[in-house]
Length: 492
Ligand SMILES: C[S@@+](CC[C@H](N)C(=O)[O-])C[C@H]1O[C@@H](n2cnc3c(N)ncnc32)[C@H](O)[C@@H]1O
Ligand code: SF4
Figure 1 (cartoon, rainbow, N blue to C red):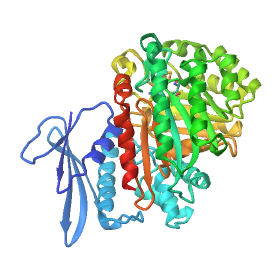
Figure 2: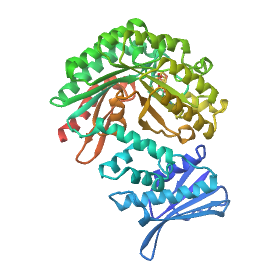
Figure 3: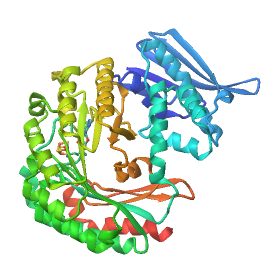
Figure 4: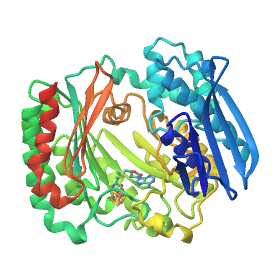
């Protein structure tokens, strides 16, 4: 158990998350009052103090009541080109804590003090202020404590993304459609998905409510400009092709096929895909699909409950190529139980033969709500160094395949505190993925669990409107969700 006392500030979340990065499986308690005393375990005091008119952030760490580390950070020395003193205080508090955590754990972290999931946003903010590349790298390394490789990576990604983001347009939006059904639930998955075995009978009603919601979005977004459409899940292709076609046609009727710049359908698991199904997607002008191996090792596929083999992936991929989809994405996960560097190399060799236009490399995240979280003692998880070596292999092979990183995000409880990276062949980036990550465009979500994010460029802020995450609530309370979306636009 780690107890933390905050003095003269309330930077709770950042402190909690940064400690969790270094000590992922420890229980952490943030204390409200100073009178408690501690004799056992780790006790951290994070305080803000004024000396001779200057503000400092201090961190003291006690183990079994003995001081083992003391660090400080001068608030004035923080130089992140921020607009508020509060932000400088937050950064200095985290830097001071970071120093202490390095000392007590003897561990360094590639992402430094960053605990958020969208590090590229910092790059965009600095580029918007006209800061030069070299200075951006300095800010990332010295202020946020990133490794050199991570700092340069997110600078490159940010610069590559800008043509898809700027100039900002408050009337442009993308559409996300959620299809929450899946053939079975994978070991690591924490998404609110509905296995077909129990929920197949809901599909027809779900699709009719979804179509009703899409029509309401058409009215809501009248006069605005559609950018991209993404049908995700779950596994969208778990529903029959004729239901999928109805949804796609409704989208075309509502927003105009010719106006949509990119249309993705996640075909996800090959155990849901047939040649017939792919032909329906193709004849409905879908220009990007995902066929996701996660790994090309059959033992692991069995272990994670995917019900398809590496050979199925190859067969389905070749079928899709034959049918001539312009962009095929493949998702991989690094750090799956039992997998080491050789396994990843095997997966990458197989993927290289297929040569997809997009590749998305995730690092396993052990999330609450997944079967894995409850049974993880049964598996061996790799060390931070091995995960790092495996990720380096993905970088090496991607380069070899002519794939370039174009979006990046991090998740909580990600193994080794690494990241997820999307790669693309030149000019084949998924515009929707950039929009969802960088939050500079309105995204309207339809379907169970879909989250709409309305972007207000003048205030540089996003407002989230989540749909219900339960199928019955989604179906029965559809009008409430439509009204919630409408209310936001009434205020605009
Ligand atoms: C929303 S999921 C849906 C994809 C599709 N249903 C499938 O499984 O092929 C998108 C991707 O997130 C990744 N993912 C899901 N859960 C994860 C976890 N716990 N850790 C790391 N990556 C994860 C997988 O690579 C997955 O393909
Ligand atoms: S990983 Fe994909 S297929 Fe597996 S349960 Fe989650 S959403 Fe469904």
